[in-house]
Structure formats: C-alpha cells, structure tokens
Length: 334
Ligand SMILES: [Zn+2]
Ligand SMILES: [Zn+2]
Image 1 (cartoon, rainbow, N blue to C red):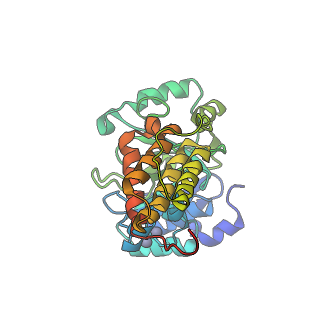
Image 2 (image 1 turned 90 degrees about the vertical axis):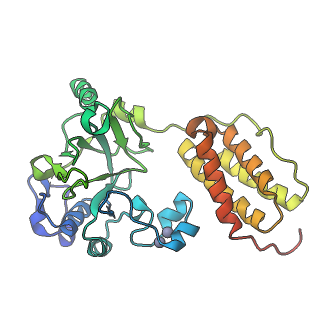
Image 3 (image 1 turned 30 degrees about the horizontal axis):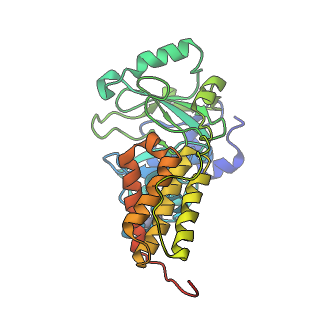
C-alpha cells in the first residue's frame, strides 16, 4: 500500500499494518500499538479519560493557555484535549502508559488529513442519521471509504481532507450526520464506549486506505468561507481619555475586524480580551470600557449573530479575567 511507507513501519508494531488493505486494528489491539499505527499514517492521536471526556488540564494550562494558539503551542502531554494530539511515537507511548484506561481518540482536520462524517442513531442520540446518510449515499455524496462502527451503534466514515477549513459541527450534512473536521476529533478502535461497553470497531477490523476524497460538492458545502467584511467602524466604542489605552483598544478592535474567518474571529476575540485584560489588571483601563469595546467589535464582525450573545460574553469575560491576572507592566512615556 503506497499510503504507508517504510518510515511508518519503524513506529508501528508490524502486525497492525496490512499492506494489502490498510491498518488492521481489532478490539484486542493494545492501545499504544493502535495509536502508533494510526500515527504512522499521519493520523494524530491523543487520549480521552476512561469516561470519554478530555483529561484534566494542569493548573498552569488552566490559568494561562486560553487561546487556541496557546493550546496548539502547549507542550504538555495531555492538556487541552485534541490539541495534545501527536504523531510522535514517544509522546504516544507515554500517553498510553499514563492513561491505560483512557480512550484512544484521533484528531480530525487538515492536521491529520481527514474529515469524518459521524452518523448518529435515533436510539443513542435522538437524531436519525442513518436515514439521512442513506439518502446521501444514494445520491453518491458519501462514497465508499474506511468506516467504523461506534460504541453506540453509529458510524464513522473517514474521508481525505480536501484542504481549506472544514468546520466541525453537529448536523452539518443533515439531521444526525455530524462533521468532524478542523477543530474536531473522534473516538477510535480499540476504545470501548464507557456506557455501553461496546467497542469502536473498523469495518473488517481494518482502516481501508487510501481514504476516499470527500465528494467535491460536500467539500464545497462544508468549507468555511471568508466572512463578509465588517461594515465600517464599530458603533458604541467607549470614550477613553488615555491615548496609550485608546491606541491599545483600537489595535485590538482592528485585530478582530481584520480576521478573515468567522472561526478565527472567536480566537481573535479571546486573544484581544486577554490583551485588554492585562490593561485592566494594570489599572489603566476600566473593565466596563474593555467589555464595551470588545462587544462592539464582536457585533461588527458578526460573531454575536454567529455564536450567540452568551458565548461572546463568556469569551470576553474569561479573556479579561485571565489577562487582568497578568497585569501589563507599563513603562516609558505614556
Ligand atoms: Zn498543561
Ligand atoms: Zn497548556
């Protein structure tokens, strides 16, 4: 199989790779072996807790790593859920050693070269993804590819990532058919579902490779488009006297306005809230003024319409709070 080169074999235990058809993982494959085999094909792996929720962050990460960029750059072994996913054999072995009861998960998106259509069942999830998927399959939109049965009886279909930003989300292909793309993950064999005790199991116990490309029409539908340019200067910016502080606030507002993708704008809001929080902490910016400015920027770029007011307020608050715990040291002329 051309998909797995000699460099991959060094990292994976040989019995997990079948060159004729793909990666062989049975419910009895040791978790570390499975992760190494996935990683050899570029699927980045991490571990969830035995109860299927992300492992707890260390205190330092809880306090300081609040933006996605910080989470991505973090070097902790198991903090920040899928951000800890890796293809490095040493890291994967250590993850497995530290969390023998954990569930093996694979990060989706361009980092792993894959997008997963996650088909839910009426029984387990209250949405009939099977019927939705049947229609998509009939229309040729979900071609044959590597597939796994989930521990609750649903299905995971794996497709090659088409490039661009494929946003993860529930019901993106219709009722009960979720997409795990960029910013997502799924639980994979040899994990077992903590509630049902049932294994996540590849069809024929094999990840058939190479993955089929996502259908172009589906890719087109799922690909995140640049958000429309904001309409001029946000209204309702607070009146601030201090020139240094005005410049800082305007800089952060502009940074949010300049972010092209809606998904990226939430990160920008998070980061800018942190930055302004450092000024609140330093005592030169009023907390209410910072909230007002950030909210105006979020409104202007459509974030409030997109994620809702509560999400925006929560993002602003957590960023401001974290930033104010790291007050900026102000020096030189102001
Ligand atoms: Zn950490
Ligand atoms: Zn961290």
